[in-house]
Image (cartoon, rainbow, N blue to C red; front, side):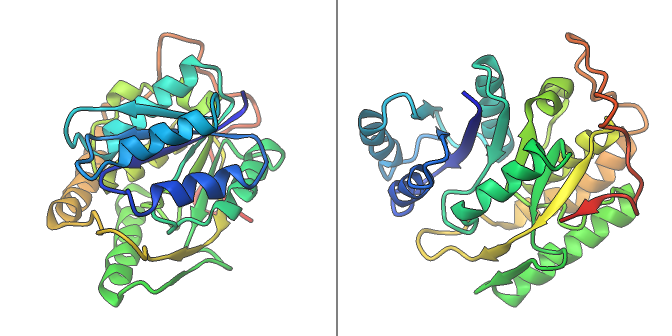
Length: 264
């Protein structure tokens, strides 16, 4: 058991079957963990059919109610670590992230020296397709704002297409990650950087969803704006280390400055 892709879902019946098939069809040994927050559209029932078809490769965790993106990923991280996965991915269900790019993120961590690989829209070679101008403005503006406030040397701070080496998630005290929406993505990158792990941004083309409804709303934007300020303030006092285990990063995973973050 080496690679697992965590996919949080809420009302993704139009996408979930296709995304599972697309990942499995890569034939690269990816396991899939779907975290479903009680989707009333029957998303979980579709996943259960795939569990029969791909026994031991597709997994489902069902939760009661819509508990938020952040808690879904934390649940998936803990589940995956407990089962010994070495490379743990975040990915959306709606094909805004191309499954073909999974191997590029994996290789960045497996042999490219990264502890965290980010599928980035905002490094050379990256971009977006069919995204409305207001979303692009919010995303790019949010990432710039985050870099200014936190000094974190990451161009795409809200990216949700990520590969972690297991050492990163074992080193982070996941119970200290408190944001639920897109600020969760920022906080995970911030915690990884603060703990001295090496981050690489891998250029991807992000495509807006074709089916289903966007989960973006005003509350998420507000959380992102206020969350970054809180993140910077809390960083003066908060320690992200998981003290349960020896969490010293390996020598190769030292802290990198703004100019040293590697872009592939």
